[in-house]
View (tube, rainbow, N blue to C red):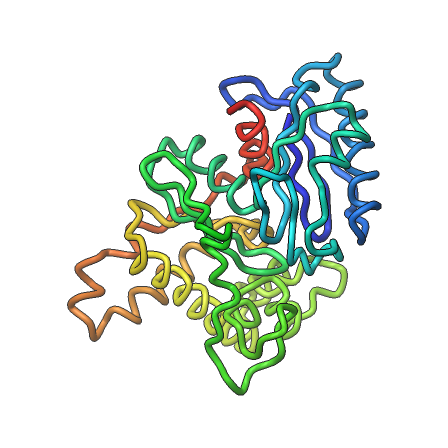
Length: 294
């Protein structure tokens, strides 16, 4: 059983050993640690009912923020309103009667993407409300000494940019995330990324310009991951990736443009190493289930 907890939704699955989804439950995310725990516990109960109790002894959970895997606590989950040091595993375990294995949501998604794509060396970019990377290197997650590996969304790139939720100014997340798109191109009831790419495809010059600027900033994030750890592939995932192949093509085009004047960058073939997370599978929830199975 795995739960993918994000800023807008909690998605839970029960999955077989080969990744087949046997049961699935999706509900909106509340704000605040205790409310998130209560809602997550309800999802666990619904999954138990839907699957006949399969997988309910251990629950893997992916959640935003800095996660202390050993102690099951979370800090800086700013988009969920969870207090620093919140004992998430302990409280969800008490509410659900299950053993809870907690990790960062991007880490869970990276595990799921690596398994589904059959790769052992993956840099995963989660393009959702925020921006984060996760690293599966030689088949193992790289979490870092302070559980902050991959928090590239909070690298400042523009000292004149907007204030980020983390408290800094001009972070990469403010220009390369779903929130960044929504600030420039509101969806009017449709997901902002979908609305933007649809408008660009329909011939809107303004939408095309916003799309290309966004793709260039995502390309910056791809380049940052590739030049730091040099994974075999870089995978685009998260809510923005639901626009599909159009996102990969736009970012690959931006990477090629950035490499046009650099023989060094061209030699790395970053466009050719770019992948899209499987859109027909709940990648992060499946990865969370793998956390629980490990």
